[in-house]
Length: 498
Image (cartoon, rainbow, N blue to C red; front, side, top):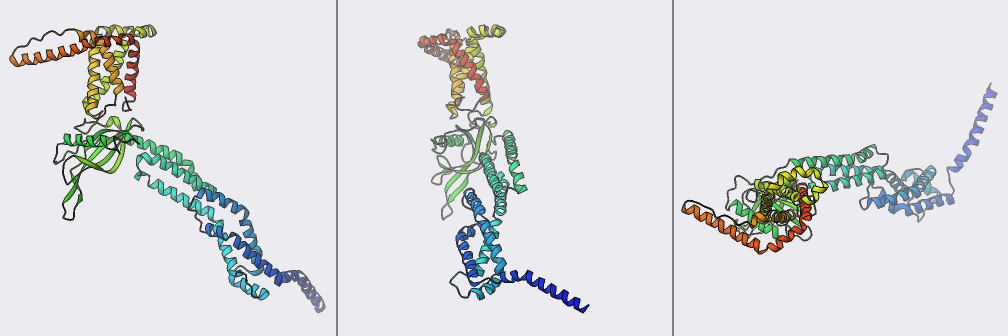
C-alpha cells in the first residue's frame, strides 16, 4: 500500500508539472516581450486618447448627428482594438496600476515610456465610457425631448407645431444612439399623434375664445373711442405693424385692456412715460385668414403725457382666436368685421352679390340652368329695387371698411356690388324723383334737402350715363363674377380683398 501511494503521488506531481509548466513560463515574459507589450499599450493609448476623452463623458453637445456618425466609425474600428489590448495586457501584467507596475518594472527596469499602470487605467476608463455612450446619449436626448414637451403650454401657439417637429427630430436621434431603448421607441412612435391631438385642442380653444372687449372699469383720462382711434392711427402706420414691409398685416380690432400705468419714472419718482394697455387683433396677410393673433400691448406716450399721441408700443403675451369672433365695432373694441352692423353688412354684401348676380347672368343661366326659371319669375319684378339696394350695400360696406382702417378688406365684392347695382338699378336711379309734400316748416326743409340731394345724385348719374351704359355689354360676365365673389366672401371672409 505505501508503495502504491508513493507511485500515485509521483504520477500526480509529474502530470501537474507538465500541465503548469507552459503557464508558469507564460506568466513571466521576457524583457523584450514586456517592453514590446508596454510600447504597444502606450502607442494605442496615444492613437485613441483624443476621441476617448470626448466619448467617455457620455455626452456629445456639438452637432450630435455628425458626431454620431464619427462615433460609429470609431466604435467599429477602434473599440475592438482597445478591448483586445486590455484583455491581453491585463492577462499578463494585471488590471490595476499597482499590479502592473509591480509586475512589469522588475522585468523591464527603468524606461522613458509613459507609466504602464496609469496608461492602462486611462485606456480602461475611456473604453468603459465609450461603450456606455450610446445609452447615455439616448437618455440625455430623451430627457431633452421630455423637457420640451413639459414646456409646450408655455410656448406661443404659433410655434408649437415647430416645437413638436423639433422633439421628433431629437427622439429620432436618440433612437439612432440607443436603438434598443423601448421608451425612446414608444415616444417616437407616438409623437405625431401627440402633435395632432395638441393641434386639435388648440383649434378647439381658438374656436371658444371670444373678443375681450373694453375694460368696463376704465377710469380715464381720455374717451375710449378716441383712444382706440389714436391707437389705430399709430399701429396702422407703424413699420413693425400695419406698415411692415417684411410681414404685412391688418389691424383688425383694438380694445382697452385696463387703466393707464406708469412705464418709466425718473429719479424723483415722476412718471416720464405712460402706457395704455390694449388688446390688438392682428391678421397676417401671409397667415390663415380665419384667425387673428391678439396681442396684449401697451400704447406708450411721450414726455410724461397721459394722452395720445403714442410714440411706441410695449409687447406682452398673445393668443390666437377666430376672426369671426372679433366683435364690437371700432368704438367697442372691434375692427373691420366687428359689431352688429359690421356683421349685417358682411352678410348683406354676400347675399346682394349672389342675388343680383343671378339677375344679371339671367340670359346665360336661363339656358344653362332652366330649373332657375321659378327664381327668375319671382325676382324679375324687383330687378330695379334689388339693384339699388345692392348698390347701397356696396357703398356702405366700402365706407365701413374705410372708416375702420381696412380699405382692402372686401374690396372685390364691394366693387362688384356697386357695378351690378348700377346696371340693375339704373332705370330707377335715372327716374326723376317726385317732389315730397310735407306739412310744417321743419318737415318741408328736410324734404326739400332730400329732394335736392336726390337731384344732385341723378345729375351725376346722367353725366356718366354713357359710361354706365357700357355695363350692358358685360352683363353676363358681371353677373357670373358677382355670384363667384359673393360665395367667396361667405367662405373666406377675412382674406385680403375678400
